[in-house]
Length: 119
Image 1: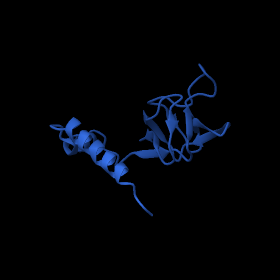
Image 2: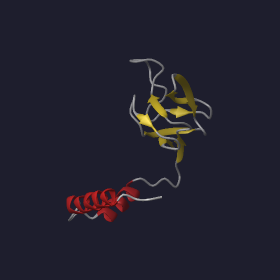
Image 3: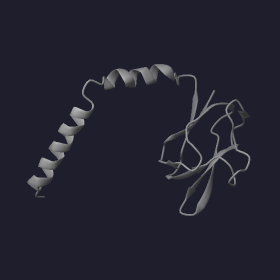
């Protein structure tokens, strides 16, 4: 496989520009601060089983499946993820209380992305 030198040069320039744009920002300390803010050791994380678009209610303007502070049971639908025009209900993996909803209505989600945190 032959690599075009022009592409390599453009990539190096882009990386140099990125270095200049984040100069003076301590990236590692910000990541550590985020980890300290949210202690997930005693939390249950519900992750997206597929790639698609997340919907928090069955229809626009409808009642949301879950709200922060709501008790839910294992198997309860926490949201719908649309993939290839198919609406897939995402069940809770455990009993618990909803502590955080990590996605917005209509937001694209990736496979294995954190979507809800339970306690």
